[in-house]
Image (cartoon, rainbow, N blue to C red; front, side, top):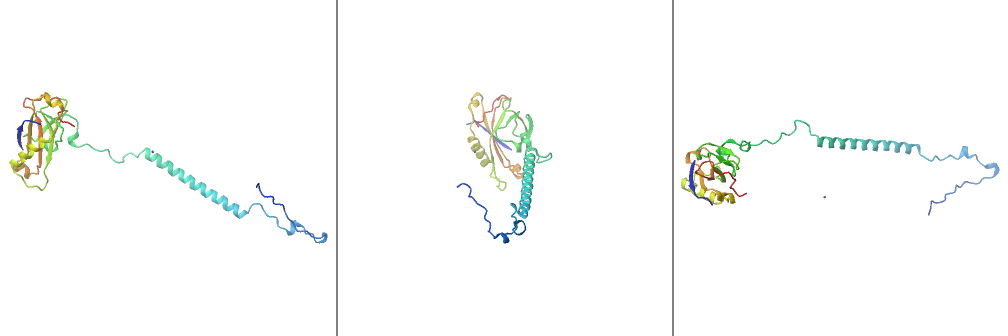
Amino acid sequence: MTQDNIPPSESSPSDTSAWAPSFPEDQRQDPSEDLPVKSSTNPIMRQRLIIAAIVVGVLVLIGVVIWTLLNVLGSHPEAGGSPAPTTSASQGPLPRDEAAKNFQAGECFADFNPNNATAKAVACNTPHSAQLVAVFNYGADDSFPGTKALGEKGREVCHGATLNAAAANYQLLQQNVYPSSSSWDRGDRRVDCFIVVDSGNTIKDDVLKK
């Protein structure tokens, strides 16, 4: 890695009378024998209605059971379902040792040395000597642009970072860290802008404007 240090910036019912035919006395018929009595309910129809009612009742019961099961399963998922999301190595508890390739903008580091492959990430309200304020990544297929172009890109990246009022409490420098030709060949495509001090772990604030 290479580095540059520069200063920062939701009708009623119808009456139906019964009518019967009239017969001479000797021809009168016994209605109990010749006139069939009409039942008030058709036995076949009644049986069909009973069957239909049973079917409807069963269907309703099945629906209630299914609805209940869905509600129970929805509110009490089975154990061993989808695993809880895991945090990445760069989002573990602080402080932690972190590889340079996993640095994220906004992170703070104690005893920072840009030439080391790892750094001690700490909470930004605890003493630290550097904070990563901006990152640029070249494409995986990009060719090495050269040291000068990388330095210019680093200054451009730093220029785009905005600091907050707490930054005025410290003598801060901008430090650009970018790939060398050999690290580029190993897949390093990051250009990082750090805000640093040259007086040890004297920063005790997050100086990056959110």
